[in-house]
Amino acid sequence: MSGAGTADFEDRDDFVASDRGFIAALDPMVITADDGRVVWDMDWGFLDAECPSTVNPSLWRQAQLTAKHGLYKVTDGIYQVRGFDMSNMTLVEGENGVIVIDPLISEEVAAAALALYRAHRGDRTVTAVIYTHAHLDHFGGVLGVVDADTEVPILAPEHFLEHAVSENVYAGTAMLRRSMYYAGINLDKSPTGTLGIGLGAGGSTGTPGLIAPTVDITHTGQEEVLDGVRIVFQMTPGTECPSEMNFYFPDRRALCMAENATHNLHNLLTLRGAQVRDPRIWSRYLNEAIDLFARDADVSFASHHWPTWGTDAIVGYLIAQRDLYGYLHDQTLRLINQGYVHSEIAEMMELPPVLEQAWHTHGYYGSVNHNVKAIYQRYLGWYDANPAHLWMHPPEAAATRYVQAIGGIDATIARANEFYDAGDLRFAAELASHAVFAGPDNLAARELLASALEQLGYGAENATWRNSFLTGAQELRTNTVDHTDINSAGLAPALTVTQLFDSIAIRIDGPSAWDAHLTIAWHITDADEYYRMELSNGVLIHHPTDSLPAADATITATRQQLVALLMAGNADGVTIDGDSAVLATLIGHTDQPNPDFAIVTP
Image (cartoon, rainbow, N blue to C red):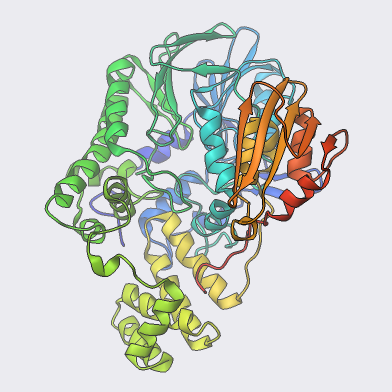
């Protein structure tokens, strides 16, 4: 768990690079919403001290770097606002205004970042927006830099909207709850709490939104001119995001690597949950970026962390990142084919010394351990081929049986304490977790598990592991879940009609609707589109059609009215012909997602 390896703590190059080009910062660095609620606060003063015993020294170093914030000059005509959110906002000056790349998570912080830029570079109008990929921290603040009805071009990689919806709407409630663990949303910022997430200082809690892209980037080599600025794109699907792209500014010798090369080992499967990423293609696209752009670049910057300057340094940095993902992929597959399972390979994997010596390959956000397991999952799935693991009991039922086999909860706690005292925190946590799931009201079991998780957190180099361990300990001790109000509702206006209907289909309570049958015809008037919807055998089927089909009810609405109807139950302006009770029947078979579901308890 130490993770520091052979990297040199006397090496201060990253600190020099992260300070380079600094222009100004907000003081205090606090951003609020219109109602006065704090949505971003960069009070990390405690990081000025020496590393305490409750933090891995390598993670302490990374937290010091990610706590830096302000407006920075990257090169002539290119600026970044860093530390205003989990991600960076990059601003590229054109002939008439400024191009915004990745407008953060929420509109409040995006607006503050743009205001800081304008305070020092002039009140330049936004002439284009680029989303590097389909994760919320790279588009959610768009309404803080342009209006919803903007006519400026919005560029994104092909299939952006599909994947933005998949990650932030379909499984959005579960991902948000899991994010409370991996991001430490409810932990204090302190030596015994969160230190950010390794990729940045955390995420803002303001208002996210989305404007659908108006220009798709579809192929490598595609060139666009925005506000007089030439940009050459490289498609990188299946890397850090299913829809992602790098791009190069040939007239400024500047390379944007999106989130494909940052100053840490990234995730192949995030702890919040996502589609498993492909390290093989990730490595190959990094190699392609070296061949296409890096040898002609004077600076490389990304959507997180600080830039790298100098052609040789850029090439060396990208080679190490390329080899990092390629090594993990190939060695995991080699060991898979020797018969090892994911947990075994994760313990066996060691990085080559040259990679271990580089700070930017360390697992502050992703980790070697859980990335190896992701590669295994990508190729072989969850089943390790041992039939004893094919039909195991779920956690609560298994825990009851383990506790019974050990001799009861008291005996289980006693055995767990023995492992805790011997320093085997991992197995102590496993046994204590069984005791908690078998007897969730047993305070001794809860405290032992909390203590084991806490110590595991203090030793973790990986920030998201630390946050997960410490959040688990917190919820065990307080027996509460501090709900967050962040949600994906702000994305709804950008969804397609099919995606809006999908968001309802995934909420159908199947068993309650087994015997229900209904049909609805939809006419979306402003697009003159028709859809047929059918509830059948507990599944909501829907598809576009060429004309208005026969149905139990016909609903006529504009797209905006459809959003209001499905997201808020507002039927103003909506016309229903036929059986007006059909819509109420459909809604009656939906349930509400649970944003506060239990994780460390049954």
